[in-house]
Length: 403
Ligand SMILES: [Zn+2]
View 1 (cartoon, rainbow, N blue to C red):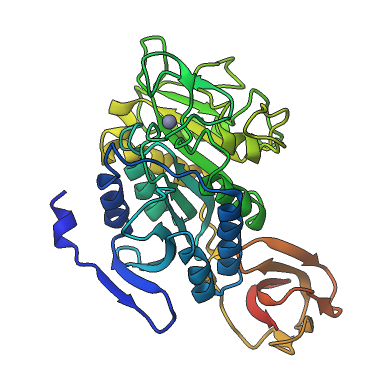
View 2 (view 1 turned 30 degrees about the horizontal axis):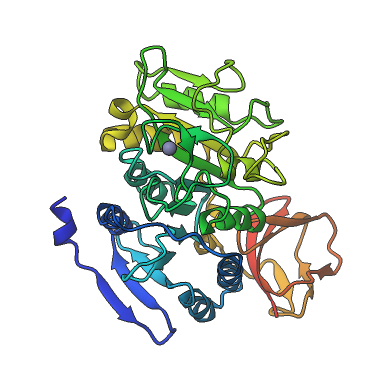
């Protein structure tokens, strides 16, 4: 904890119209969790109009109009920070509430230079001890796409959430979840950002970190996709194997494979939305997509300190391979392959010897076109694209700008 004080943060309002900070993103986030609102402060449920403004701000970030997005989000008492992580030499966008808070909707990090198609969500950083710190630890080392953390304790809502499910978490008798519980309320920016990123980044994997008090009959880890169905592409057996390899004493269950029903996140609204449920607040998923992982973890083996966090990091890094091509910084340029004209207005040609395959990605690493011939290429939307060109001898990378 003393390291909090030793790290110096630099905050300036730049000519770009939004704040820039540098430091260690782990320290920055852990500080926020340590300074959670006191017990007499309450979550404020966003209105439908708030959520529309939020969505507009996020869309503007994806259009690379950061100053505009910042202005939009300012209407919600939120701002965008360009955060330079000096530990890993990375730059992120942090979406956070101003220091004088009244919403407590949470803090969100977007990483446009990620190498893993993973999003880490921590809806209960306080109640599920250390899951927020564990999440940012893994996010930083994994070079993941995004990190979500709630801004208030799950029980600090004025009202109950209208969504399904009950809990004894916030009272002695069983009650509905509170509206401050981001995993159990769909009227939230946490939920809205989940569906936006799922759409924009073409179904990346969302891993949601939870913690539970282990009963004797419980395993140390409970893995679920939010349903009891088996997806076509089931990542959980491999993830489970990689987790168990970290510690010979760990035990685990997978909800849909081991007929396990306790703490499997079937009322979790992010899981329901990602599993294509039309009304995630009220309805169970009736099918499964496979890109939501609900992970329940016992404390001493997984959450207590960085020894446990590192088990999760190792298992995730082995399960989800780092693809450097997701990152803009590794694009190589050369004169063997020619893209003309570049920049262009959406029509261009690629010329070179022995081209077998051309694969076009958008600036978020999403594959949008595979082409076998060398005819004119047509891209209707403006933006930056990354092109992998495979010839009979080499692979080449090109960047093309469509105006
Ligand atoms: Zn939880």
